[in-house]
Image 1 (cartoon, one colour):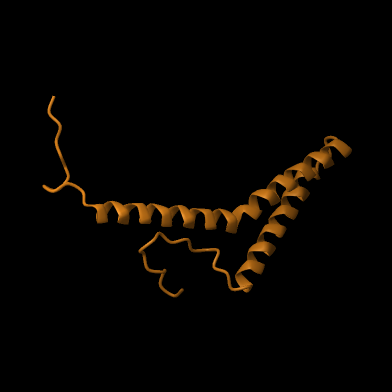
Image 2: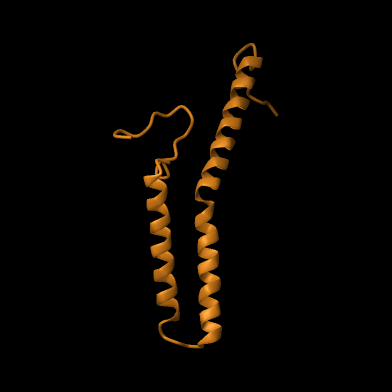
Length: 105
């Protein structure tokens, strides 16, 4: 069985490996920042779901339990996103390392 070496004649240099590792570390750090930036949405919808189940427990089969719960959740989410955008934090554009920001940003 023959293996093909796709590396240059001298193999991968130490500098190339260090650059690749630094790129991976940068991408992991950006992923963590994005998770922290948007993690509150997951908590919000978990609480909204629990509130809907509590309403269903209190008033079983009531026709307005879930529509009201979901509507309140949407209002809270949009209010939270609006507050974040007013505070100057960019929560709409997540960029990869090395890419320029979108035009107009």
